[in-house]
Length: 329
Image (tube, rainbow, N blue to C red; front, side, top):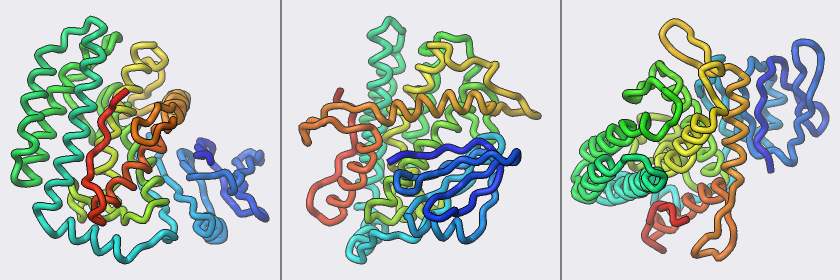
């Protein structure tokens, strides 16, 4: 199965048993439904209900991005894998505060562990990161002591503040990056973080779709804050492994430079050429495999996202306590 990324503008229509993208110049591209996992639209595409119905029947989520490459929303087909029992357990674990906090703490424990893994990797390569590692390890010990979600989010924010403070040490290019700025991203690094985080978020959402989990019921993020907030929860674990690692690689290898960005008013955005470079590395990283210590076979990063959903389901059903992914390789 493949993810399709469309940059050209035009019209999407169903043509027999395929979806056809016809560009403004009349050229067209055939999208094979039978091998499509999900669809990412970066250009201006129009489509009719016949096309949307066909995508929905084929259970294909469509993720939309605006001209600047910022994620704007997802067409989420009617869920095919539904379980009333699991939905009840999801809600129970949200409304029972202690149960919710335990799951939320585990998301942050996993994310923090993976952040430290990144820092220790670069320390081995001669970067002076001892001070930051010690600070984050001290914050890590406080995660299990938190008594509210707000306090937990505060710890998570402090971990990221210290972590982002190391990036100018890790990145070999001279970059202007002091802190995370989201709306709008104001420099090269913040733009890459926003773009890649949205890809991780949408990939998690596509994997949640094929599980029986309801994406609107989350534990770290408020269920009413974003529509698909469970995807935000699971993405926290994978951002250090995907977003951060890819940014370090893109910049340290000089695959991406300031020439791949444009500045509009007071913020930066990726040009199409830059987006393609990022997507190419993102897809190749998603397909990388590692030997799974429990399954005793190779699994990809994408597969690990789905496994994370299954682990959460087992926890909710009382079969096995959830432990977030910690990089072991």
